Every structure is written in C-alpha cells, then in structure tokens.
Amino acid sequence: MKGIALDIDETISYTVEYWVRQLSKKFGNPKNLTPREIFEQYRLIQNFPHWQSKEAQDWIDKDRNSNEIQKDLPLIKNSNHSVNKLNKIIPVVCYLTTRPQSVLEGTTYWLEKHNFPKAKVIGKPAKITYEDGTKWKANMLQKLFPQVQGIVDDNLHLIDYLPKTYKGYIFLYDIKNFSSDFKNVIVCPTWEDVLENAAKVYK
Image (cartoon, rainbow, N blue to C red; front, side, top):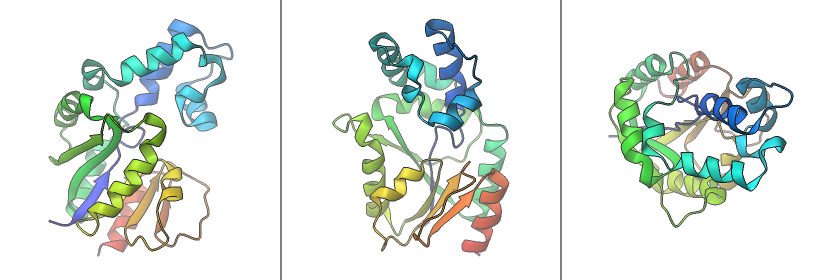
C-alpha cells in the first residue's frame, strides 16, 4: 500500500509542552516564557540558553529515552482527528520519528491511546546520534519512496538532506514563512492546511 509518513514530536505530539513545564520547574525559566514562545524562538528545546547545563541536558536525554514518559505526552489539539481525516485522503503507512527505537513501545501505546491510524512506527537506530537524526530521517524517506510518498513534519531542516530529485511531498507543518526552490515542499501553518493541500496533491 502506498501512502504517507507522519512525524510525531511537534507534529501530532505536543512534546515541547511537557519538556518546557518540567525544565522550568527543575532548572528555572527567568523570562517565564511559555512553551509556545520558546518553541517559536528555538524550535529545539535543548537550544534554550538557560538549559545548557550538563544537568539539564542529561535530564533531557533521560526523558527522551523513557517509555513511560512517551505514554503520557500531551496531544496537539485535534491532531488525532486531523490525521484520521488525512488517512482517508491518503493512507498513513508509517510514523517516521527521530525518537530512539528504545521508546517505540511507549510511542505505540500513545498512538493507540489517542486513536491514531494503525501503522508501523520507525524510530532512529541506537547507532545514529541525536544530532544526525534529521539526516537519517531524510535517508529513510528516500529509501521508502515510492511506497511512502511524502511526510508531514515540522522540521524544515529535513529538506537540507534531501536531493532536489526527491519526488515525495514534504508538508511542513506549523511553519508560516519559508521559501525554497524545492518544488515539492508545501508550507502548512495548521492541520487544516495539511488536509487541504494533501487533497490537492493526492486527488
């Protein structure tokens, strides 16, 4: 079956909400920035200047590798309903995430709990460092094409590792302003935009 892949963190899971709340309690948040404000400024929580201590970074790594924490992460509002609508436009054939393979159990539990379409979850192998996760994901997209004909993902740097010849579509979720000469990149500020554009592309 041909279909589309989905990213998880900050695409359907509001992971940043959990991390910012917990890190603020444990290590402080001098400007009292909200999860959304920190995400918009830094995208990656570990880049927030106040949380650069070894203790804070170690805590992030520990939680990133916890199955129990994955089970209770907050949901991006209505993302489960939107994904089920997307699944009717084009089948969701896999969840492609830079989460390590060690937390696929907790991730699968979370997906089932929120009634997302059933599909294989592909996680980052242990031998791939977190810093190389985006490059790994781009390589996987190329290998999985044409069965996987695109992805919904919030990481605009994914494009940096894809050749211009890649024929799949990249639906950049929660991105408002971005220009690229990569013809198959579609900017989608909201899930409504994802659904509207997917219906046009996969009609």
